[in-house]
Amino acid sequence: MDGKNSMKRVLSQFDVLVLAIGAMLGWGWVVLSGTWITSAGSIGAVLAFAIGGLLVIFVGLTYSELASAMPEVGGEHAYVYRALGKKASFIASWAITLGYVSVVTFEAVALPTVVDYILPDYQAVYLWTIAGWDVYLTWVLIGMGGSIFITLINYFGVKPAVLVQMVLTILIVLIGVMLIFGSAVGGSSANLDPYFLGGAGGVMTVLIMVPFLFVGFDVIPQVAEEVNLPFKQIGKVLIFSVVCAVVFYMLIALGVGLALDKTALANTELATADAMAAAFGSQTFGNILILGGVAGIITSWNAFIIGGSRVVFAMAKSGMLPKWFGYLHPKYKTPSNAIVAIGGLAVLAPLLGRPALVWIVDAGGLGIVIAYFMVALAFLVLRKKEPTMARPFRAGNGAAVGWIALVLSIGFISLYMPGMPAALVWPSEWIMVAVWFLIGAYYFYQMNKGTYAVKAQPDEKMEVKM
Image (cartoon, rainbow, N blue to C red):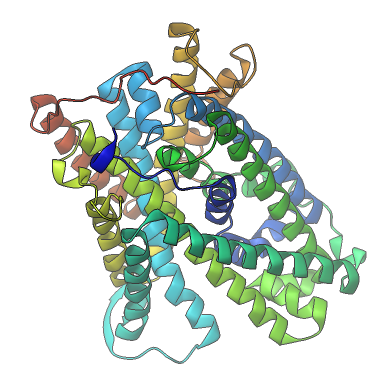
């Protein structure tokens, strides 16, 4: 597409890098670091991120090759469509949209949760109780206000959204570096003992958090049509972003382990903030780290409304969803209707209260790993079906990367099944998944009837520049 129907290629290499890194460095590094260390030990947690990062890199390599070969809006949508057809593409696209929507709505609930730590007595005007947790109007309004703010930023153009992403990602990295250096100077190596807890089971407990913590690199393929750099560089930037996130998480785990002893870890609610305060001997520095957590909430929120809206937009443009979702704003060149739809879900999410945090994360995680599996499968099919397809970035000469990514994706999916450590909770989380895919089944039926049929299909082969 071109002219009035095309998106603007306005994103630089640095824009794309901060978009992905900011997506991966959300709120989890602030609230979960204590759990990592008490589950696996200080070095065990670092090892878990090294292993988990390696797994994500293999999945990322398949994305890198396909993103450079098919730099089209929608990412997974285009890859699976070309390799496996329209029906499979719908399943992959709907699954990854669940993952993106889950992060967007998660952050809408996480924002007022963070404010609880800073202003514990601000809640007023009781509304109702959900799963034993009282929901107050002031709490809800903070989440809704944040949702509206992020939605508006994205509505008015991808460049303003990425500018916010750049500033806040730099802030997160600087605060993380402060913690790491502060712990190295003010911490104690004695606090690292015990190095390992729970054996392989302890490492596995941290490892199952990896899909949620590292989701974000796949936002890059969603905006490939808006990237202004050689297609080969798209793949390289994607892999580099994953490596940066792996190193960040490993160093944060090590920094917290150095700063806090066993007693402190057992009694902390926000281990990373307490580690910062301990390293510098002042609670003020703990509050500074909380600001880094708030920045992480916004960067993840921002990145996933970008990614989710592009997938929904691509599905509508190829006749899988109503045409309304495929509207491109004539002035701002954004998928404005898709942005409003996803932003609207975020506005409603705080009404469910804090218990929704866990429900949303787990349900969305399953959607993400299903999409990873289908992208790995598309990678293998296209290697066999279209061996001469232009691939500016190649993930190895053979198919080994694809097979490893496929097997690892199956392993991730199995972790969410009944009887496994990260099994979805019945009934709340399975109901969320079921409702999402029932809605998808309705659209799938309408798609097969040709209700949303369009003239152009996204399986047209693109000529790409090396």
